[in-house]
Length: 168
Image 1 (cartoon, rainbow, N blue to C red):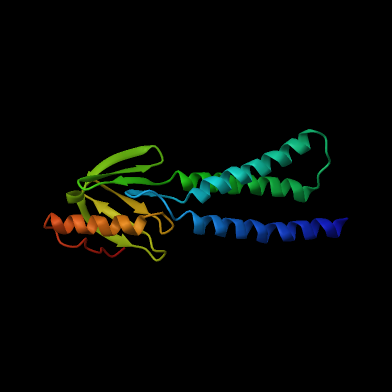
Image 2 (image 1 turned 135 degrees about the vertical axis):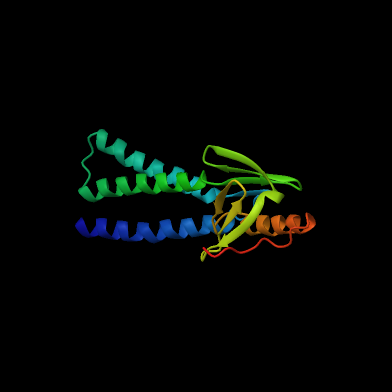
């Protein structure tokens, strides 16, 4: 019986990783003029929260679970929280004149003339420096690079030239 539990958890981890990778690859299609984190984060967060809730309900119903099941339940809840926080962390809607950036519940509208510089990061993301503030666009964000190219084109049209790279 003990070996069956080891095999079950050993097979569960690669399945979960493959599902995450598959969802991240498929969720690259998003509507134009919107930058957001992949929908896969929302799906994975909800599914892992559901798995954690099922294990908690089984425990409350009197079914004896091992300590490994309890640890797995806590890990499901942690993964759920991290994925849901990551999904809600960034949303940018942009058009020809301006762009609106929402980070969690903080919302601000900028014009392309407000862009002062950019700090590139190693993971493909970047930090846009504005006249009043800054915000980070993660490398996993859907349409993140398209937004950067569009913003740079708009800066060219305004006569500002390319967005300068600022050493980070």
